[in-house]
Amino acid sequence: MTATTPTPEPLSTRKDGGRFFEAQYRIRTGDVDQNMRVRLDSAARYLQDIANDNIDATDFTKTDPFWIVRRTIIDVIRPFSWPGTVTAQRWCGAASTRWTNMRVTMTADHETNLFNPDEREPGLIETEGFWINVNDQGMPSRISDEAFEMLSSMTDEHRLRWKAMNPEKAPDAGSAPDREHVLRATDFDPFKHLNNAAYLEVLEDELIDHPDLVEGPHRMIIEYMRPIQPGHRLMIRRLRDGDTLTLWMLMDDDGEQKVAATMSVGPAPTVVE
Image 1 (spheres, rainbow, N blue to C red):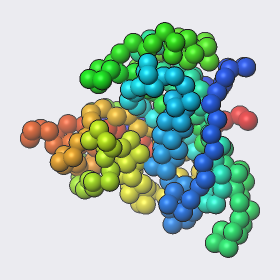
Image 2 (image 1 turned 120 degrees about the vertical axis):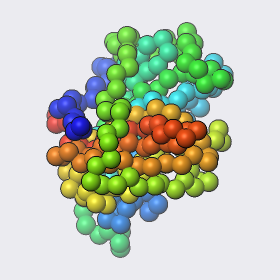
Image 3 (image 1 turned 90 degrees about the vertical axis):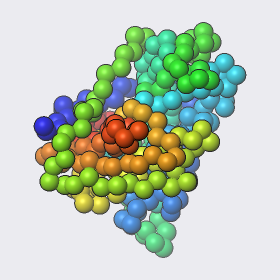
């Protein structure tokens, strides 16, 4: 089996005149790797922050308080680095009665300091998240009329459907043996689920051996398939196929190995600015 990624298409643009939510976040040393690059897990935390801030700015904490992320796409067009300020704009790119594609465009205005004195061009990261509205039992639930009215006003696509973008079935172990990923107490949220951004720390561990994948514009896709809870044992299966690296997070569940999440990194689409 080989892991192949179709030629990527750019993410949707914002509807003319469509409303959006905007917030700013500082880039800090805890967000970057040893080369000052803002890591993918840090970009995912910015997405979590603006999602939380966005819902807090609405009345949906009462009507639609529970959402889970099924997929996140992160297109790093121009990398972010420290120090700097991120401006994030969030809106709905497509909707259905139970789920939405939430688009976030993030730009970074870079600064210089003693540790990073060179001028850098402004950063650009385009993202899309497939968000599912759920009830307090974690089951997909119809979006409230008020929320759907607001979300659907931002887009003309109102029949959003799910289609996986990563290969879901893990291949047989290849030349690179599976490696264990040890979970930490700090990786989990108050609902005892692995934090969405913590998954990408697994990918960052792998990218150390594949630096060419993040030297230029690149697309990361993660699809969350099963919740990971404290006590689970995780094994990571890896496959490098040309200019794409694919990972499968294998979870031990009552003696059976199941795919908990898939991740891929490959070339980003060409973006016309």
